[in-house]
Structure formats: C-alpha cells, structure tokens
Length: 266
Image (cartoon, rainbow, N blue to C red; front, side, top):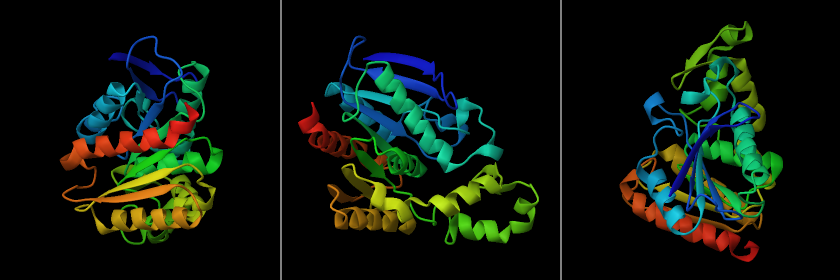
C-alpha cells in the first residue's frame, strides 16, 4: 500500500491522506471517506480506525483507492468554526473529487463516498449540488433536522435567536457556531432535496444506533427507492453508531456495493 499526505491547493485546503494499491495506480475506483464531527484525536486525516480502516484495507485489496480528509473546521484544516457550515463540507467533498480527476488518478463514474454520521450529510450535499458521485455508502445517516437532538438545528436556532441574530456564537455539538450554520441547514436539509440524488446509494445502519439515525436511514432509503434510484438498505445486527463493532461486515458490504455500482463504468 502506498500512502500520500497533502493539502489541497483549492478550497479550504483540507488535510488529506491518499491510500493506493501501488504508487503508479491510475484510472481506478476511488472511495472518498467523509467522517463526521469528531474529537481532535479522531480527525479523519490523522487516524483511521474501526470500520473506516477495514473499508480502506478492503479497498486496497480490491485495487481501489481510498482518500480521507479533514473537512472544514475539523482537526488539521484549522477552519474557524464561526464560518463552519455543512455547505462547506459538501464543497470540501467536491474539492477532493476535483483533485482526484485533475491528478489523473480516476474519472467521474468511478468516484464515490463512504460517509459516517455527519459525514453522510457532506456526501449527500455534494451529490445534491453537483450530481457527480458514482455511489454513496451511508453509515449512521444524518439527513434530517434531527442531527443532534429532537428539534435539531432549527429548534436550537429559535432557542438562541437573540444571541445569534446579534452576531454571537453558541455551542452546538462541541463547536461554537454562528448564525451561518443554522441558516444553511434550515435552507438545505438533505432530506428535503433527495430528489437531486441520482447515484446508487447503500444505507448501512447499525441496529444499536440511536433512533434518529435509524429513521434517517429508512427515510432516505424509501425516498430514493420511490424516485427510482438504485438503493439498498441493511440493518446491521449488533452494530452501533459507526459500525465499529461490525467493521469487517461493513467493509465487505461496502466493497460489494461499490463493485456493483461501477461495474458498467470500468
């Protein structure tokens, strides 16, 4: 396995780790790993453990590339959380996508996302805006307003409206955020724009995860299926929020789905 560490020359200059089967690999399938909100030591560009590590290893074994990156406001990007929004995370996925294409590593039709938790928000936001992804594998799906708590960002904004409207910051999921974040989520909730998702999508959902993520996964699956999008769903027994308890199964199912999604494009 060949590893490369770098920052993008465009966008938010996210810190990236690229894993290849061999140094000169070209025109191969690529899995972009989108991690969710994390504690610094778990930042996607620094450590890949659990299910993501198993997916990475399985990807390499099957001749695919795997790229992880710290999205804006996470770990090595040094992004100022006053300007953090899920729109920027979606743009970050697109920046990585463009790097992959421009570097000659791969091409549209072979590049997709493996997202966990809020990382799924980033993947869906990218697909909804650009329509470029070849596939999405969504673990602990976060597409509704109930991202953290019932009522989610919309209710949280209303509860802190005076502070936010006057330029103040409020702490939400360990981040001090401004009105920008709440305005963006209010206008662009993924679940309200699923008609723009056209790529094959696999919802891998842990049976022990919280009820909000379970509902988002089922709702997303049902919406895409009704829209005629190639969609699959699996409730993973014994799996928690990130499927680390069933990491090997997660990797096997992810690679199996990716192969099926890109089979006609190789």
